[in-house]
Length: 293
Image (tube, rainbow, N blue to C red; front, side, top):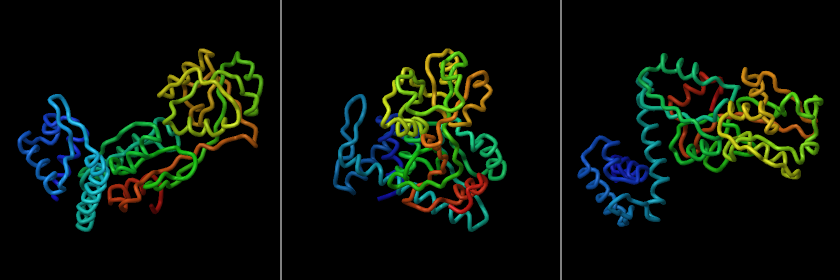
């Protein structure tokens, strides 16, 4: 089994199309198709169900995809480790992050990394923390900056960076604006503006209100959009404290939750457990102040 065959297989699996996969890999479609057939012969299994418009993974193909990602990630880490011994930092580094984490400022961090290590290609992906850790587990991302409550999912290690409290935001004309501290029970029946279920803050909120019924009237995928809806008094929002420090939050009332109810928003670095982090990942985490990972 050749690594090149696995690379072509992953491209076809993700593109669901041989022509687009060939264009992505910059090879002739005939060569890519021949590699897939060779891989199927080697495994004695069909990996795709082919049609005139697209291709779909078979059960065998789905089983191979996760392992292919891990194998390719390990091979890349091996190449990078050899380069590091020679005093070089090269290859690629794919980073995932949830939006507006607050405790880590990624643009200047990645800019500093690129200036120090121009031989490393950096790719950044924004998504909810749930999606980021799943991509980490599958080997599609090298490192992620996430905010997840509870223990790390299987296949992922979480290295804590910082913790922030969750606070309540509401319109200054809202009745709750008269309070500086609010009990979770007092929020029953309120209309909420909240993030989608994949976001770390939403997962914290769902745990916080596990025993209290609440109504989510507006669900968003953007911090500034959430603030817009709260400014229009269309709901209250339970958000990480860094959100309240944004200029766009100016004018909204901020209330803390009663001490016995106050949840914590934990920001962590996520790395896969299937293989040790490569030199580029280790260097990025050092620059981020994560210490030994």
